[in-house]
Image (cartoon, rainbow, N blue to C red; front, side):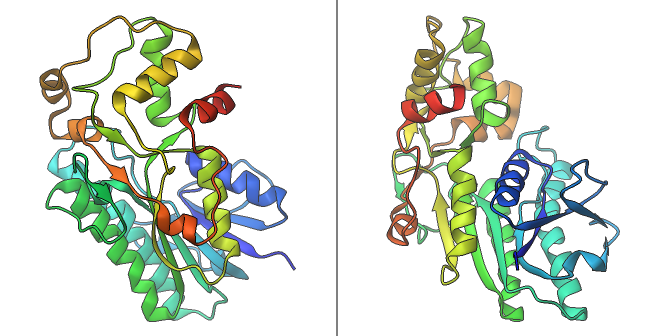
Length: 301
């Protein structure tokens, strides 16, 4: 009998890609969402995190919960209100799931959760392992609180896996789409010094790593989710321009200009995060796209 997987945040780009792949592999997939989904192959159950409402039927027959829910980190400026929304969307959502598991009979064995490379925040050239501590800024604190909320599942004797996700490369969303747009128009440029490290990963390898965690039932703990080959902002910009066959002739966008436009949120594009992925490789995971040019060729192919 196929395992039944419940995904929170299933309408996001990672959630959609993962759901499609799991269905092809024969898994049953259901979503927790604020509205009814359009895919007839996926059962959607309604929840309202702010109101503390969740459809109890969502847990029927579920073996694994994949927790992807969370407000976009760079969707709007970081006002105090927005910061609170970003944190609550991650922590209150999994707390609502756990509160349901505590009061009903269930078959859930595993929770696999997203976290983010923002756990480490801006660390220059430091090579960051899963044992590297967070620092005291918004991104680090948000991710630390997120992971602490997920770890409450240990009280329910669940297997917990957390992925500190780097910059996910997908031509239709996120960083790649935003960097590629001006390059396509002939006005692309690196940001700031261009020397800040980007721990990137192709969307297809993100999906593959979630499936690896799902199927490798002795895997648990926290893992960095990026390729073995982080690159600088300048190198990524150059690689995208090469793939798109567009010239780069403008000077880098100055950091002060990004600070003026984005405020504190400029950390998202100016911060430097260089993650080590030895731990997930030692567990047996193999990347399909570890090289940036190879990844871009596949993405745009």
